[in-house]
Amino acid sequence: MARDLTQVTGKSAVSTGAAADLERVLADHAAAHGWHPRHLRRVRLSLRLLQETQDTPGAPITATQVKDLTGRHLPVESTLEVLRAAGMLEDDRLCPVRAYFLTRAAGLPEPMGEQLRLWLDIMIDGSTRPPRRLPRHPATVHHHVRFVTRTAHLWAEAGYTSLSEVTQADVRAAIAASDDVVNLTAALHGLFAVLKGRRKLFVDPTKGISTGSTRQTVPMPLDTAVIREALDSRHPAAALATALVVFHALTARQVRDLRLSDAHDGRLSVGERSLPLAAPVRTRLGAWLDHRERTWPETINPYLLINRRTAPRTCPVGPNYPWIELGVRPQALREDRILAEIHATGGDLRRICDLFGLSIAGATRYAWALEHPDLRGDQYPGT
Image (cartoon, rainbow, N blue to C red; front, side, top):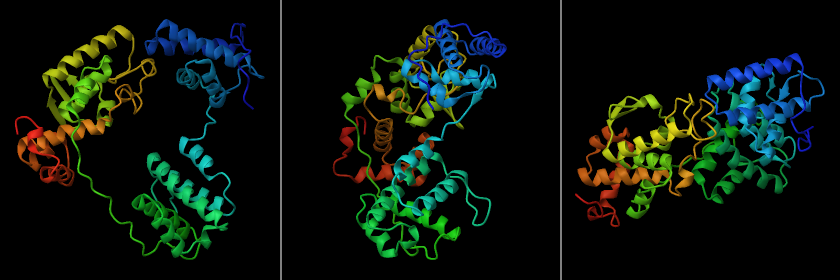
């Protein structure tokens, strides 16, 4: 049961041997990670709050209890790291995709729910018994859960209690009513393949149904004013991230994964490529590094981009940072940059592949823009 931490002050002295050991681990961890004194005080307060609520002093503290600190605006992740380093953390959290599944599958009848849980376990953990399957990426599992559970609820409303009752006609009807045929079909194929392999049904109702192909779209350019505003952002991290995408067409993931050591001597290492940095990028890189040094002088985080949440740690920033400050998608910025190069080179696919690390198929998608009536070359100066 969750503890009520609102009445706990954290000022009571906790004088057990475990508390003294935890304080030593905290001090060592803070020194090793270059924590600001204020951050150290807040984590110490978190630990004292948790220790004051323990029935058995010195017993392991669950991650769920630590999460209760969120309401007091205390540093949860740093507190978890210290407890883990001290061997006092009992991580009782569900992985995010399992928690998402429980929410989405709530109310489904049995044995349909049991069948879906079996499918989820194999999607997450894989299977070493025939038919063998590799674990899927959490993002893929999350994506499939959304489509599968939505359709399962529709079948449950129609009176079905087991997925073994679903016919090919039911599958075709669900696909026909979907606004995302390709993804739903792929998710249902995966679901029924698992259940058929585990002998939970006799017939795979998706057999013979094609997944089709993903609809190809022509990338569109951005308004120049939007790009200029993002480049001139008052947030140094946002301005640098924008410049890296606008001038070098890095993906959001590549920007997030850049390390301090990747930028040196006017060049940037991205995978196996070494890029000469454009002058506007160098300017914004210098401004960001100055800001980073002033704000977090003691941080040991190896990543180029950090924020107040990651500075005391050694992990990268989240996927929405710093794009949430800008209101523009990094993919749109990247597409605009590649489009400009396509027009400047007259559709030289080999050059596009070399510059931006694209496959021929990926570069061809941008080359189609040359023939698009709304994307004339005079939109790009110098072409």
